[in-house]
Length: 148
Image 1 (cartoon, rainbow, N blue to C red):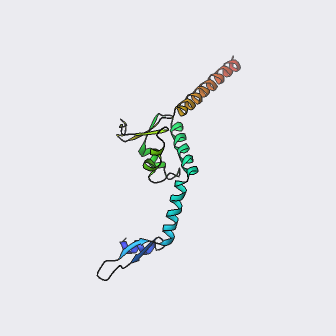
Image 2: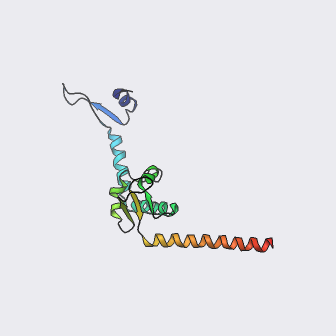
Image 3: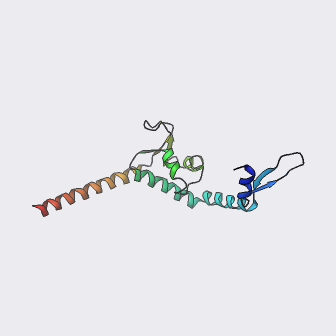
């Protein structure tokens, strides 16, 4: 597909214009697309939404059951989880008490990892693990009583 065909196909997003004679045509976003982009950026900058995204990242790390998670894994999920495209620079950097983006290379992937730092997150994980272990022990006890 040529550039012209692409621009024509997505004429609601791109607008072609000629700045001056002798110059090649230029392309810019339509006013409606710029308005949508501004609206999306305002949503991502809203404090309530930023806190919600931070909690989603924290839950993802807790559900993964690891102290660290490679960024490429989070990158694959960022659109599904509603993260801004530059969440590492604009969001994680604002919450150093919660997260640490380290250049420690993951031995399996060789990629940069995100490490959770918040002490309560670790405590929640330990409590959940203990509760899970306790429920398994209870099931074994009940199964032993029923079976014997």
